[in-house]
Amino acid sequence: MAGEVIKIEIHNLPNGLQITFWLQKWYPEWLPGEHSFKTNRIGGHHWQPLRVCSPLGRKSSVFRFQENVNLSQHCNYRIGGPARFFFEAKTADEVRWAVGEARRRGLRFFILGAGTNLLISDEGFNGLVLKPNLDFIEATSNFRKSDFLRKSDFQNVGVRVGAGISIAQLLDYATTNGLSGLEWAGGLPGTLGGAVYGNAGAFGGEIKDNILEAESFDIESGELRARNNKECGFGYRTSVFKKNKNEIILSAAFQMKKDDSATVAKRTAEKIEYRKVRHPLEYPNVGSIFKNVPLELVPQSVREQCADVIKQDPFPIVPTARLIKLAGLKGKVHGGAMISEKHANFIVNTGGATAADVKFLIDLIKREIKNQFGIELEEEVQII
Image (tube, rainbow, N blue to C red):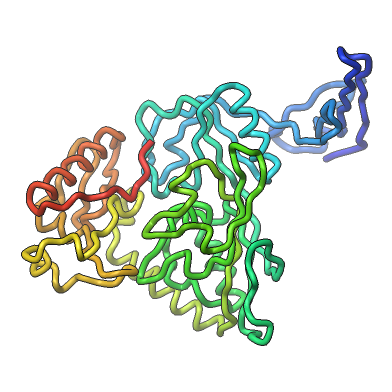
């Protein structure tokens, strides 16, 4: 339970600077069990820091990096060593602070979403792992970079979503509010930020199809940036954010259409069920390891063996899973990692797998597909 707030000012610092602290009184006897916060005793009472006012007069939260955080707990693979430093940012201001602090200390930093498309090395990451967890969803008609829809079209709805919102949460919101346009993403893992970063897609749909604009934090300038759909540079499983790597996605605004909630729920559930049946969800995994192969890059002799699985995604492709099957690699095991029998473009953790185990199988697949079919595979999974 919290009590009164007091203000403490420190004067006569070098160069005439002044620092102001705000503290809030806490009464531990009112709280059962152990507390997740640390308090300071002043005048016989417990006080919790609220914020500090900098010498320049700007207020900021009292932040601190966590140290030696086990990254296997932040990745679907359940693989990976420790991060030297870790910070979860809830606001754009906290993202700005974390980036500034990392640069002040000369630290490398990596931006982490939900870890659903990520292979983390066994050594971990010797720097800062920053997790932007901006978790809001709100209806909106205010846009910085986009002309929102024709005013006469009352079926269109604008929705702004924080980068930390999971795709599952976004789809729940869409279903509850009867909003159509993202049903193809049913069962898609990960966060909104990660989906925008890699232009996630499935069943012929892509995240770019509904995005009006995206807001990001520019690491170099320290400023917020807004881009319309075209400026996001979306391509097959890529975007300007993935190519440049000097911006952190904070939010995105979507254009959706009003629809019957039950109909939206049904279409979304169909996609979820498809994934459950065909994907090896019984094991820790990070989805497809490789991008599918554009049909134009597949030799004619191989196309004939894949004719029954060629599809639009969003252009004509041959599923990489079929190529891996044709190469005789389904079920191959190395250490605790296995090329899935259910879906050959998945490498699963059967128990105790290391990043080195997974990387061995990735290299094996690339080598065999190149040798047998003359096709260069490109990873969809991110490796650090």
